[in-house]
Image (cartoon, rainbow, N blue to C red; front, side, top):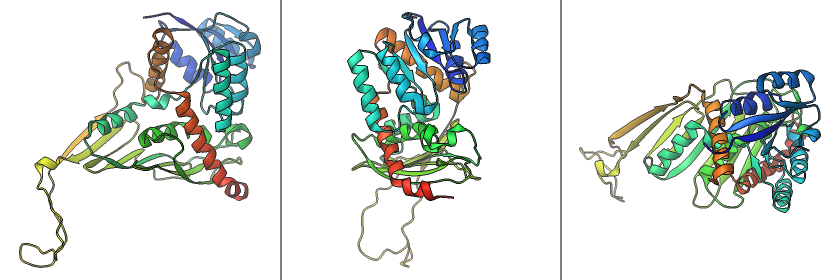
Amino acid sequence: MGKRLQVGIIGQGRSGKNIHADTLSRLPDKFRIAAVADPLEDRRQRAKEEFGCDTYADYREMIERTDLDFVVNTTPSHLHVPVSLELLQKGQHVLCEKPLARTAAEVDRLTDVSRETGKRLYVFQQSRFAPAYKRIRELIDSGTIGRVVRVDIAYNNFARRWDWQTLREFNGGNLYNTGPHPVDQALRFLDADGMPQVMCAMDRANTSGDAEDFVQLMLRASGRPVVNVEISSCCVYPGSTYSIQGTLGGIRGSFTSLEWKYFKPEENEKQELITTPYVDENGMPAYCREELRWHEGSWTFASEDGLGHFDAMCKEYYERLHAHLTAGAPLGVTLEQVRQQIAVMEECVRQNEEALSGSR
């Protein structure tokens, strides 16, 4: 089972309470919520009653403690960098919510301070362990659909939004709010070192703020598949979340169900290139046509412990983090990978500064 880790959480909002505290509470043999910091009294009282933990109005008081194994930073997005820096410099290991930062330079600064202080910095990229994403990777790695040519990831719906996460000054907008999930997966599908080619268009459709709520992103690298990401708040007819095209077949589906179709070359006639006019069995001009023998498969998410797909991937992240901290097992998400993700999103912003400032 390993050591039961003592955790402090900064913030008890949507993320701090509904994601992190709730997930930690599902793993009582691995974690104990020892302390919570939030400026709102009702949230502190709720945390004290629900978790039996110490509470603080100011997180700076909480991080003076020396008994915490790590601190979860769920402050608003624009505070992720300064608060994480402060935590590291105070001698705390840190798990930061996404987005880690707005620029690659900020990630470099955080990495440098982590190295200088000897304190670890982790980023909550739980979608790396999304059940559907993992099943797709298994199918691709098995060679079932052949070489992957194109990947499409679409986080689309139709929604209006008017809270603080629609404002650029708070690192709001679909790119930084939602983007860390599909962009992280997209870069793993691309599987290329360094900075890929980035082509991005962004717009403001239904948002009340000045940040984008439509993102269309294409990633390319030599010898790699074309990878497209769309995050739209003005899509009334959303299609598949995932669509993968390969040389032997393809995969499509949602967060909770997938289907795939493929053929096996050894079961079908080998076709040789011809340069003479193509004709049918009657000698008449014709198109190339054949009947391939197809195979099909499907998958539906089924949680062993009754959790939905979102809670399941959060739980797996924390289980992996516990194994990493107590037994040295690989976590599966590195700062180098997060830096690549932030660099891509930074380039998206650079390409759309003029469009965003003048849209509407």
